[in-house]
Length: 565
Image 1 (cartoon, rainbow, N blue to C red):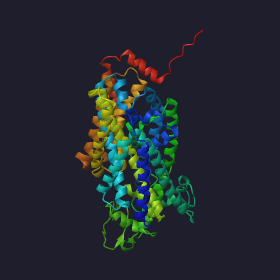
Image 2: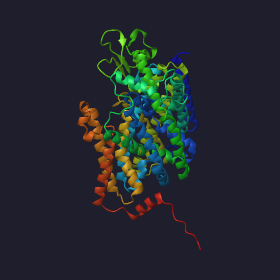
Image 3: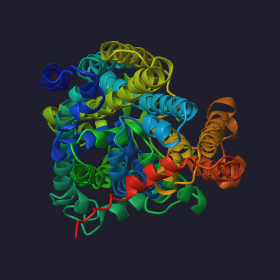
Image 4: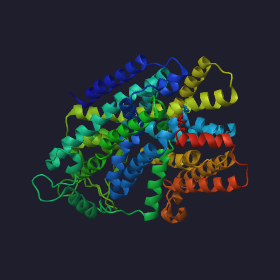
């Protein structure tokens, strides 16, 4: 059976599964729409959290980044993994104990201010729209290749699917859909990695195989890749080229951005108890590790196979007329291109003036099984996994946008007397509008998938993280300080990113960056600015009311039991 037919079958079956789950678990109340009724099992919530967090950037783009950037790409791996640990240990239990539906809800009540709630809503919407643009782009990339449609059509199909189970099921439908999506994406990520690891090194464990010797040779796989990279004008694969300060700031931005992402934080409100929040965080970390420890192996396998396929075993080039089918297939999407510079009819890929190939880094995971000549069902499975990753996170983000509008902006601010039924209507309406806007950004994204997502993490780091940390661990932080800090942090970070990525992209060079910090890492500086502004403003404004300080104390410490003598 050909790849297209197999893809229709496997992807179609997964869509039927997701829609069936959405119908079975549709939300009937605002409590079910916002937090799935608060009775999700910790293991199921761990799977849903992993699927929510492992977006298209994790599934499609992260291994592609490592494949092209080598050691430098490890900042994404370290930042996202470390950020989840930070979230699970330092924030999730306390936020769950606070008992609010959303991050703006926490900010509004903790900082005793409707203005603080409104600022948090604006930040949440801004962060989520930036993030969801990358997810919709990921959907378009998958569909454009495997269903042989253009990216616009692919994005529209993804919008329709997400709209159905987000608007119908709310958090309840999304939770159980994400459990299924996690199983699909995990299987899709590991199966080709195991296949290729056995083919290239004889080791069935890809996490070990990519550091092993090549089958039938005494050469280690990474040594071969370093040699190929040097010969072809690329930087050595296992050596970094980024400055230490930029590596630190990107990693920190991704870490604290993860801990401030509203669509991940809300998952810890779907379990019955605070203890269950900790347990589901532990399960999620285990599920995430299964994918993240495999990413460097996939990146290495794909890089070696791609170079050998394009340049030939002797690195003299391959006749375009005899090019593998995967190159011709991906050319149709516009994500691979060939320019015969020396008119010899041969393709050649290098990191210098000899290069004749344009290769989008977002295709590496999806093209990996094709490059390695794996069976068509494996290729189709990877397509289903990529779609599952993008759709699962998109749904979580869109739900945050809809709840921020309906619950935080309308119910808790502009329309306090609104009924539950009307609130649910506005939540679904907001989700529908958000999907349309997200689809537009999916068609016209500001960068490749992981880069767009990195911007979202930077915005979350510079706005939410300080407000949440101070809200939990510093009871004397007042509303004026928190609001000023959030506004200063997100404004500075957004302005920096917009300038270098949209206003003057030609200036996006290390020598022009402030202190050598790239737009991907500027969120860390924005976070520091947030803290500084908050503490300065706090010194010149009113003290926090005593009842609010007592409330903050109760979040961190259990109430003392009075024992009768």
